[in-house]
Image (cartoon, rainbow, N blue to C red; front, side):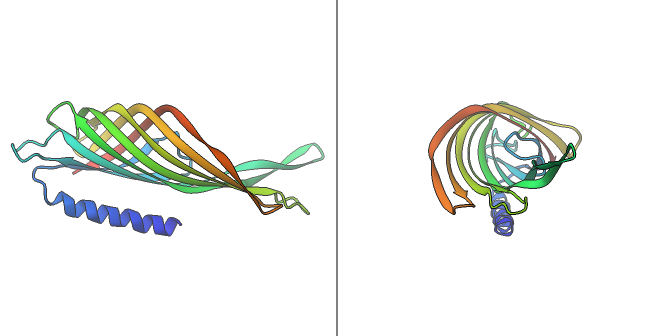
Length: 212
């Protein structure tokens, strides 16, 4: 799945690059997320922002779009057993994998995009597998939990230059998600559909990027 996702990201990048050539006086930002509560600690993401020029002046316009692709890759430990008072853990008992795709449309309040304060609307799609394997001898316990998340929301943020080419982007917003889940019980091979739920809450993202 990760290979297919990387190929998809390359395709998106090439498409955006070809679109960027049709605009004048535009800027681009390639960034990575430093803080994203959705992602596990060993996951990583890549973002691309492109400003849009209306063509009425040599200045860069107030609008931009940003696309973020993320790969989820992490694990948690679970207690295996206790031997002579010593707890023994399986560090890879729970494994996480998946991806997240997010698109934003930004409106900057000044005419120097992608710098300054902005308002954004966004929508995203994410899918994550959580797999638990009980590796104790003679045990067949375990599960595979598949979660699909469709999100949308709005927020405010600021992007500012750290140097001539480095930028910092800080975003806070309100996010609404529709989450559907299914759980496969390894022991019985039974698949259980979990009732969909709606969640809302704060979206926070901090990223650092290169402006060119």
